[in-house]
Length: 248
Image (cartoon, rainbow, N blue to C red; front, side, top):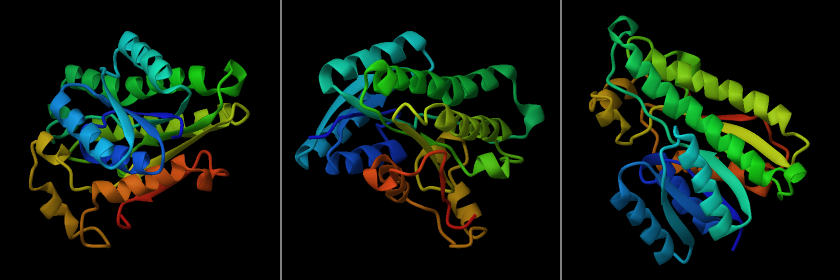
């Protein structure tokens, strides 16, 4: 089996699909979740049923001590740590900016930006060749909202994903001699439960007609892009973005 791979927010959606596919390609996976242990355990069981290996770990990625503990656990259980997928993210009910309050901004940026920074920092500490690691890939899950801006729906979420794009570019350059590649995938309209969480369960049907391919994507389609960037086939890619968005 291969090195350890931490996937944040891996109990459902894109994270779960990525965990399943990555395990099939030989990664030993840490399935991080925040609240829904049952969903995370289901992903672990599916991986084991298919001959892979995974463990489940609860941590709020916005909490520095919990992130540090998760990486320490991964290092003990799955050494060496060889990869990270910064997938955990959140959005809230669709609305215009003037309707939003500051506590919402705090929640969005704590998970989407601070969480990604904390996890990337720990990954560098364990993976960088200058710290005795063996190198490896980091893949950040951004969003086409970083390009489109999320007007009239969630400009705060879009702004947080714009920060992820900047993190990807800067960290890719910073770590170019550390044996660590940093890339990102920008999903578009993907058929996952996140739309229910945003209070707009009909969003997929409402927007699909505006997508050049006239359909939403699947979590599995995004996962294939992520796992390709994790693989040695992407060995000369760093600071690279894959838009998995149906042409939008």
